[in-house]
Length: 310
Image (cartoon, rainbow, N blue to C red; front, side, top):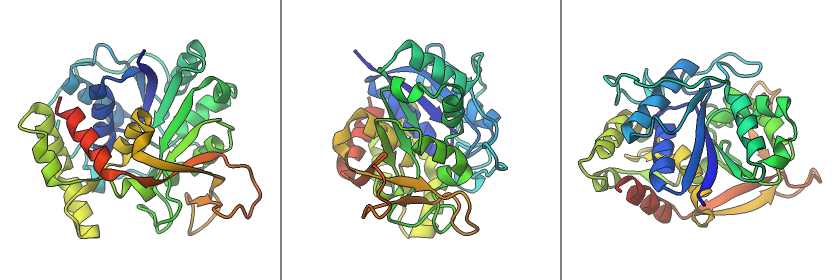
């Protein structure tokens, strides 16, 4: 039995790599991919997701469902500087979408599929958490029916990537993130910048993918992404943020996790979107998150390259 999953994405460069890893792994029964406003607009994220499925030849078997087109309370905050005007670094600019999104609304789709498969569905969230927050508002029982939630977001012991303190997904919709973290999911894993920054895709990994359609796509889509990372960090590479969340859903052996109480700041001039982890239990709250604290980056990169090379 393959593991039933729903991916929730705002498809930019690393979301697309996460989709490639999830589908190419062969270990998931991907029930659908819900899209949301984030790195790019909802329309662009949806088109990008459809294009990635066409690249894989799976557009007919994996539905794409449009979700929220804005954060719960805040204005849009796109990341074109990192992901390019189209979100994919221009890699599929000439591809026409043959099969668009399916009917429906992303949060409703999440609720319906989980209720049809109680205790079986893993939600892999690699975008702002607006869709999941809306799903919880509609059906609070989701927390008991879902198998687990693996989300890419936050940073608990380092610096942010959009402000000095905040990671992008948390910053874009911190109210949604707070709702999700406090919902009471029995299995909620936070794959944050503390570990994703150590999972670096480099030229040798891209070369190992070979001269294939996927290898060429990865090389082209990450070119500007790697350049931006190099300018800021002095290393020619790019962090595999979203693919690592998919990797954690595939095998927990690539990370070390510890249970902590985690909250999100929503009312600060300087620190909105900051994930605050109570490492010393000073607040006396029960842990609500399994926080990824370490990663076997070599093992994950082997998994990533081997899977995409198939």
